[in-house]
Amino acid sequence: MKPPPVVYHGPDTVDEAVRLLAEHGGHAKVLAGGQSLVPMLNMRLTAPARLIDVNRLDELAYVRTDLEGVRVGALARHADVERATHAFEAVPLLRQAVQTVAHPTIRNRGTTVGSLVHADPCAEMPAVLLLLDGEVLLRSDRAGERVVKAADFFVGPMESACEEDELAIEAYFPKPRGRTGTDWRELSRRNGDYAMCGVGTSVRVDDTGAVTCAKAAYIGMGPVPSVVDVTGADFSGADFCAAAEHAADQLDPEDDIHASAEYRRHLARVLTARSLKAAYEAVAP
Amino acid sequence: MTEQLHQITVTVNGVARRGEVPARRLLADFLRMDLGLTGTHLGCEHGVCGACTLLLDGVPVRSCLIFAVSADGHAVTTVEGCCEAGGELGPVQQAFQDCHGLQCGFCTPGFITTITAYLEENPKPTEEEAREAIGGNLCRCTGYQNIVKAVLRAADLKRERESADE
Image 1: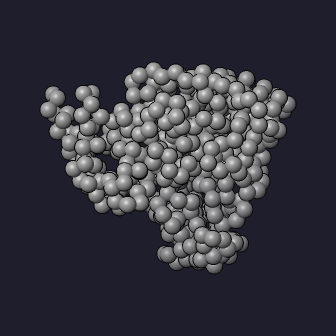
Image 2: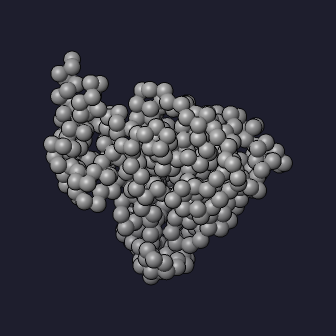
Image 3: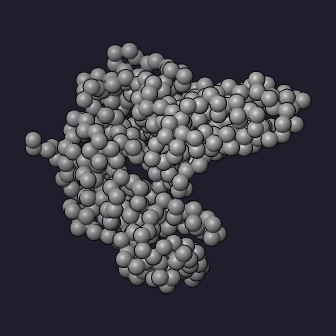
């Protein structure tokens, strides 16, 4: 199908975009990569009165890495995040996960920050932000700038803390502390499809190889991405199955057309064990 | 409601093309309806099938997921632009013919554009890499064996032509 009629705005500056949102926020949608929004428009699942196209805001097309972590501007495409070697070196999980976002052609256009704001419970990057304790910087005419922590950002399925009059400016992915390994893996029916279950893990070890912090993040397992702390689990077995079992027990997936709840929980157990092992082995002495 | 029209200029296959479009005109429909370039095919219209893939500033994107007005000031290469300067078949087009990489041809423009850009990035792909490169494009009749062969053949043809030019 074709999208419904809509009034178009193509601001050239962030200030102008924020002013337009202040004026039309409740009836407008921000268009960045459009890889989720435009299908919804084409299928007429949504019909905003106005579109505020931020694709001319070149000032937000950046992926910056410093000692603290990686800052991804609102117009950075998934492909920019994937290709940025400095970002991979600081926060390997970014590339590990972004490579599983849809297909390369979609990643060429879709933006990482847009994916966060869209808050699809099956999307990878929200879980990455959550696992790393990241933040999103928002700006509005009303409230100025505010920073929302990942734990407070994903409110419900397709619902983030970004208010109608706010523009997401940047996402911040902190560099994991100490000797930390990360891993991302997922299973989907076809390569590039939404995952039935996706798992990201981070494992911190001390100099003797003992696990001092271990977490697993999940997508496709509930209405919002979730993180389970498995630091206290039994890591004595080489296969990490006890920790994976512990994590999967905390999840409450539902049946849907793609997979049963029981199959999803099975996937979570298997993928978590493999993922924890890979993350551990990346940094173990 | 009378829809507001926007003046846009898009460089299509090297030629600046002007148009006047409503905001909701998809880039694919601008090419097909306004410019008469019907090489770009629309399949699913929600980004899954890959038939409408074209190159926006040299990068493969879905033209069903971009509004024409967003492409204002940018350069587009469609399957019509994937030929040689003299109009002969380009290496990817020739490879599809050589390897029988198409039957009905509906998905072909999306494959040609995707592979054309991919070979710039990776001029000598393995068979596995070739499969990965076309993972975002669906074909419902030929199947993928001959398309994978066409990717590898196109890489050879492109190298041959480039070395012949030197």
